[in-house]
Every structure is written in C-alpha cells, then in structure tokens.
Image (cartoon, rainbow, N blue to C red; front, side, top):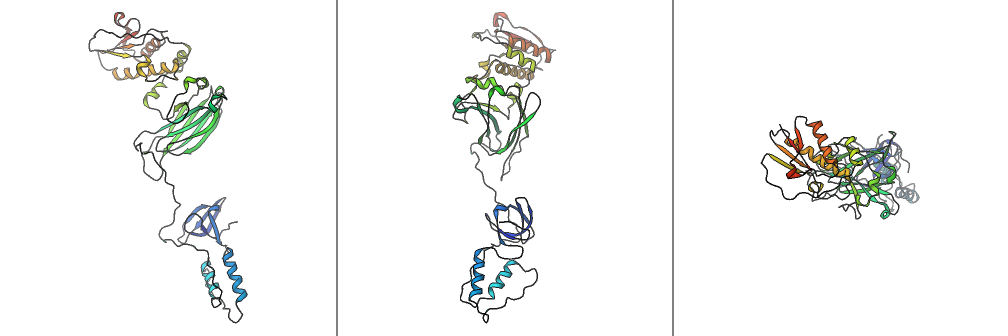
Length: 394
C-alpha cells in the first residue's frame, strides 16, 4: 500500500503508531502524540486512516454499508458537528454513534494501543549469547583462515574470517595488486564467536598482492572494554597454500586450515620487524639441522646461554619453512638483547649450530647494526664447537 504524508499508521512488530510526517525512500518517519518522530521501514507499518481521515480496512466499510442499508430516514441520527482538527478516531466514533439505535452490532475499529505520553517507544534490540568461558578483559582474537575447497580436489582454497571473541567485529578486507590498484574483498559485521566464508581463491594468483585488514571491535547492549582500531597488512603466499604441511588441525574447522592472526601478540609483531633483505636471503638459503651437545661443563654465573635451535623455541614447527623458522629465531635474539643490553659485564652465548651458516650470519649482522658497543666472537670451541657466538656487554 502506498504511504502518504499525513496518513495514520500503526506498527506491525510493536505497539504504537502515529501520523506519517516524512518519507525518505523506504524509511517512514512516524510522529506520535508527543511529537517524537520514529524512523521505521515502510514494510513495518500499516495504514489505518489516510490523510483525509478515512478509515482503512474492510471492517469499517462493512459497518458503514450495513448502517446505511438498515437505518431508516426517521431513525438515522445526524452526526454531531466536530471541531476542526479532530482526530480520526473522534470522527469514526461520531459517525458510528449516529446509528447506534439500529439492531446491527457495531464492528470493532482497528485498535491502536495507548502508551505512556512521557516515554517515546524505541525499537527493540536483540540480545546475543556470549561465550561464558571468555572474560570481558580477555584479549580478543580474530583470524583470516584458509581451507581446501572440496577437500583439495579443485586446487583452490576458501577464505574465511573467524571472530574468536565476545565482541562484534566490523571488518573490511582490501586487496592491492602489484600495480597499486585496490579492490574491496569483503566488508561486514560478524557476531561474537562466529566464522564466515567470504571468498574462494586461486593460490597461484595471490602472490604479489597486499591485503589490508581493518578491524573495529565493539559490544551491543552491555558496557565493554574498548579495543584499539586494528589496521593490519598481510602478504599471502600462494606456494604456502599448496603445501599439505601448511594446513594444521585447529579449533574452528573440522578440516585442517591455515590461520592468519589479525590481532597479533608481541612475539608475532617482532617476527615482522626483519628487513626485506634478511627475508630474501633466508628464503634463498637452506639450513641443515645438526645434533645438539648434551653434556656441558659448568661455567661462571656471568654467562647467559641462549639456545636458538628451533625446537627449543617453538613447541610445534609443522607448516613452517626455513624463512618462518629464521624469523622466530631472530625475534628471540632481539628479545634477549633488549632485555640484557645494559647488564654490564654479562656475556651471552647464542647457540646457533653450524648448518649452512645462515642463522650465524644473520645474528652477527644484527649485532653489528644495532649493538656496535658490544663485542662478539666465536664461543669456546672446546665447549660449543663451531656452533656458538659469544657477545660481551661492556
């Protein structure tokens, strides 16, 4: 039914109604008796009287026709004159009361429920269920996730977003190609503790792209601890999506998946602080594992031993290539040096092994560039062989 300004309407999904004061596309502004304008969709209201105060609906029309048919000219009462500006209900009641002497029962007028004059009605807000195991102060987690499409038969992967938190998350994912042209992959609001599939990708076409993920976390109905606005860059690697070892068991999917954290902890942030030159060199070279020494003689208390073997740093290395492991090892070196750089007289022994020498070279270049006041050399051959570097803090 077409709506016009001045029509009297009532709400379908809640009590109340009023006069149409304004129409904007599919949004109707309904003015109630107190002068408040309530915006609702046009599909959520029904007209009960048009702007000429004619009652809508078969109920009133049948009542009017019946009254005209059975009331005689001698018994029909003239309606009482009404003051200008009378409401539609006053006009209807006056018309019906004029024929109350006949034997035909009056049919009911479409009801409009009254409401308190001092409290305008507001749309109801839906309540959501929150994870009882997660506290409001717990750090939220949000991931991009990749799973094999149709079990891996098509060679493509499905891209999902995973909101592992008690927060609503409004996200936008923007893809920028090698030419600097950007495309919006997806933008939406996802409910707490929910995952959604947003796209299907060809792994061979994602190399050279830069994904920018913008994330805003909030809660409805209840108060909450405000979270920062996240703006994270992700560089997907197609070759990693093709390796079976890159996909691992997880808590969110029945099948194995690659999880890319958007909200990163301190350790993950430090992994990204390596320069492009370091990453390129690490990817081009391999590293051979070597047995570690078990028995070591006692040393003085001013020596700090730091084992950089990857299995000593990470509990699980499945899905990691040489580049990923080098990043983890160098992040640990940064943490140790930052913590002990002012401990005068301390000697730090980094046990890196022999291998192809990649980790050793990266370690020494890092020290030369960032800690020029510290002296470093090969550690004792008798105790460590050729697989350790000792740093002396002045």
